[in-house]
Amino acid sequence: MMDPTSPSHPKSSIFGLNDSPKDAQIILIAVPFDATTSYGQGAALGPQAILQASHQIELFDLDVGEPYQKGIAWIDAPEEISQYNTEALGLVALARQHLAQGQEAPALLEDIDGLCDKVNHWLYTEVKMWLSQGKKVAVVGGDHGSVFGCIRAHHEHDPQMGIVHIDAHADLRIAYEGFKWSHASVMHNVLEHCHVEQLTQIGIRDLCPQEMQRIKNTPERITTFFDKDMQHAIFNGQALCDIFRPVVESLPEQVYVSFDIDGLEPHFAPHTGTPVPGGLSFQAAAYLLSLLQEAGKHIVGFDLNEVAPGPQGNTWDANVGARMLYKLCGYLGKA
Image (cartoon, rainbow, N blue to C red):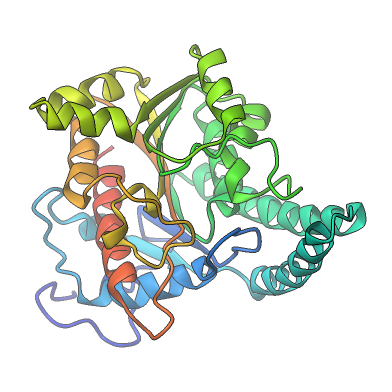
């Protein structure tokens, strides 16, 4: 029996635990892949940074209690995933050189998409296997594009689920820089390939005209709560519970949470790849999760992505990511 009040052993797993996947109720799968990140790199290092930071987190949480008692197991990606990332990063650099010179590089783009496809297939197969065993499964990315296989597997398992997408960006581009599986295209791919009926986005404050037009043209599937509107409501004295109420009401009973850390205010994750001023506070995001539960929504799975450690070993981003991860595990366990 572990003592939750004692310091974590340096060689322990996530949150200082040592639960095996066989015995744990919750499975966390690391995906160290960020090949298509278009501004700052580092998300591939996020899973390991979060794992290390999680050792100093208290296992009693004021929002979710003691989710560790359900059993939480961490699964590292096979070495091939890191190899795919290294190979894809080299190809992406070449493709960008061609792009800067006004040249097309269809062969390079095809190879990059092929490596992303391999990551998607591996993750889809892995998540589907654990779901079939009655486990609750979540993913720690990696860039946002790296979690597609997890969403696909969950939607096949729970076809009625909707997605709450916390992000600074809409991620609805058909492709970005020519990359079909770009982090900027993940929700386009989810809508096109998984046929999710309801996508609810919150915190959005950075998007292109085509994405805006798609949101306007598809109100029956996409409900977007822009950060500007939320902040203006707060400035005008509206309570956060009232601001979040239509977010919760837009979702079906089964909910998947796709949490890009840049959905938070940048000082919570300053080293994420594409930080944008504005966003949710840490407590506001946690409050939204609590409102989902209070409304009878069941979180069936989640991903947490785009956490990147500081280049000089700064642990703040990973600290924030690990704490949000524990809350997400708590709500997943309660479901």
